[in-house]
Amino acid sequence: MEVCYQLPVLPLDRPVPKHVLSRRGAISFSSSSSLFGAPDPRQLSQRRGAISYDSSDQTALYIRMLGDVRVRSQVGFEPERRSSHPYLCIDFRTLHTRLGCSSTSASYDPERRVHRLLSFQRYLHSSRLLRGVPQQIPLHILDEDYTGQARCMLEKVGNWNFDIFLFDRLTNGNSLITLTFHLLNQYGLVELFQLDMVKLWRFLVMVQEDYHSDNPYHNAVHAADVTQAMYCYLREPMLAKSLTSKDILLGLLAAATHDLDHPGVNQPFLIKTDHYLATLYRNTSVLENHHWKSAVGLLRETGLFSHLPAEDRLNMERDLGSLILATDISRQNDYLSRFRLHLDQENLCMSTASHRHFVLQMALKCADICNPCRPWELSKQWSEKVTEEFFQQGDIEKKHKLEVSPLCDREMNTVGNIQIGFMTYVAEPLFAEWARFCDTRLSQTMLGHMGLNKASWGGLQQEPAPVSEEAEPSTACADTGDAATAPSDGSTATTAGGTSSKEIPQGSRES
Image (cartoon, rainbow, N blue to C red):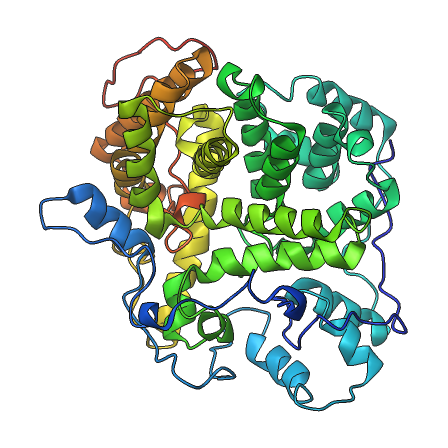
């Protein structure tokens, strides 16, 4: 299979489906308005899933700090507000003005109609092509030795120590396409669901394109990592013997698209800058809703499921959204409490479709924040990447005189205290319950890595190293708003602080 490809360019004379409305990136569909319906008006004054807590509940307090909305904009009758700060290289305000100026007109220019199918990334890429500006990063043909090494790595794709960073280099930055295509084919889903190979490949290419490569953390490599983790969970005996082919297809697609078109900032930032996405989704699971509808837009644009009956397509889209929405960190306690109750009552029935879907939701949540459970050499890289992304957000907030979001101030936070807090209040409770559900070697391995990593971060915190030398390498920040997607990271088995060298069933330990 050839890994390198030429990115497809959407023809300008292509007709646009009538169900596509004039919103770039986030696509709504009039044919299924009930599916993507707005929240109940009673929910407008407060976020759905907002966590109520008393002052003694430290876990709830931490999750509230990570994901809940502290700044609420008015969502009354201003669906087209355009006062977003141009906080990234992509000026969403400018894009929205260009596309929205003709949204009320009955007849639009065909070129603009095409752009409404595109995400922020592909809109800019298409615009550059139209202006005759060549691609800045050409795709090179991979050396045969590299493709051979990538194939060798795919043979061990179910190993928890799978190095997604190395795999991404071996595939020339196409880890998400290559990995997802391999897994779908390995499960026989391409043949079983009669998926058109050209449509599938185009869909995966567009998915990878729509992740922002300039995001330190929320990029296609993170999506590939979550997809690989999801595959590991799907192989667990409790799931492997019960899940249907449809469940597996949805699980893999949800993992691959769960952060699609992520702007690199969290939900509170979008809300306090009055970004149009916050208004569109009424300050409720803003990013997760955007990821979902962006994924549905690509499914419909490529026609990947066009051969299926209409009802089946809508069900697939709805179930895909249910999985992606479960990654909202602000609803962490809701899902965890429900999961714990099922385990306490021992009433999870994997022969029931709704219970299988709930287990898939929990599996995706675990995959999304599994970085603290990876071996140290992988986990630490993820911590540094997510920290840099959120410190960049903090820098932007300072520049625009905005309140700096929790954990995003590089002068007030360190990688150690952020990671220890994330593991203590978010990751450990979730993975402890997952281990109750799947008491397997993999579960114990993940808990073992997390314990070693947490101890090592504690040891690094106590090291009397010069601040000038330690501050920059350890810029790691837990993800807020979308925080569960940016978990803490690992640590060495032995540290300068003298942590215990606890044995783990599998995986490497750092000396």
